[in-house]
Image (cartoon, rainbow, N blue to C red; front, side):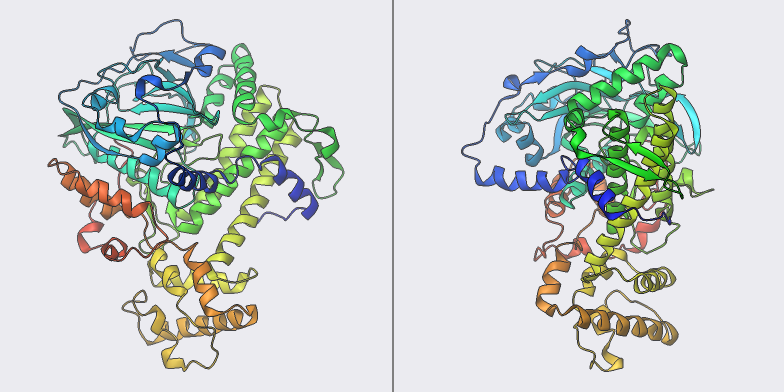
Length: 588
């Protein structure tokens, strides 16, 4: 992407619209710390005492039918449906004390004998009003029509002691009207991946849905992992996902796709989202003068104070841009960036075939379904998210909520916000004071040529000293562990880059110690590599859940050295590159 940069004052004003949530993950991490410091003062509730609220069901149109027979649902945002997965002696695999803290849930509740029953859906949770959401989406660039929660059932919303709203959802809980030809279930393999990555991304500082707990159902589920006609039985499981909202771009698209008759639902749903999740937009003052010139001649004007929906879509575009910039910063590839997998809150949502860059390759995709065109590969993520924003903005245009100029401005803001944030992130990762395009481009080219481990490279980079007198033969010593099996020509290329990098370090005037400390705060040592997930899955499938829990603890401190845990930062072994580990299909 190479969008033109905005007027700095305009950029600053628009950014102020999004201040309330754009630093969500960092604030939540701060809340985690405060929760630990004040744990004796904090409200601790039992499951029966949770403060339920059901704004989604109460304020939005619902399906008059409540059966789970797969069908087209009309004029409704949801269908009330009960969890129906078969359960036999369910077990608690893992849980997040951090997420329990968000809900004011006493961590001792995880010890209850009936806890697995309640979070497998086998036993009703007091106060819950279960439903499945209706949405559509573009899948691989093509409109797919109605999709919806085919195996996810929302239990309702919890209001915590800080008046924060958190939606609880069981994934793998059984059929809904949106299940199409599937069984509505999930397997342990995919559930472990979703549980662990939800929490790992949060502790990396990346906005994401969260996960409260993971339970086995005690029943087997049949899956054809590679769609090759060889199905097999696997252990079933259910993960409890948590987010302030699971609304997606596709939640709005589905109603706009049905023509004039349902355009009013788009407006109703937008009002609901703004009221509950973007309340600051309702209060934008005319004095803020959020008016901006657009186009090459600057003669068109977009005034965000005169249309709350325009301000809203711009904020969604900016949150999405910030999110994908952070993905690129840690080398994360989502794998399935369909519009039904795009959160209006700018959260990472729906963990399927994700992956981190164990070997830097801009064309890397973890999704076997995506291999022919690599639409969702690492390098394409910014452009695909921009395309998705365009589809979302088009939906609001169809509902007569925003103009074409306002829609275009939202897409423009996505581009500028992404470039601003991505450049800032890369500059921080390099420990520099200002962005150096030539240095960054040369680095990314070198990483790609030699397929260097992205995570370990940046972690090692903080060991380079700002000393231009280092002999040429010693320049690569701090990077020896990450620059493997490269010949003389490539060593020369890397030495040349390191020399340029050292010149930039010297010019910054920051001490080596101070720079290393700041770089280690933004360059993780530990990320959730696919082979680490697989090791935990292999153990869990023979009823040993210890590795899932150990891996969770490691991923809760990704920027710390964690003596004794170094094996979790190692390069993948040879077996990690087999199908089903490094790459997965969209299948659960």
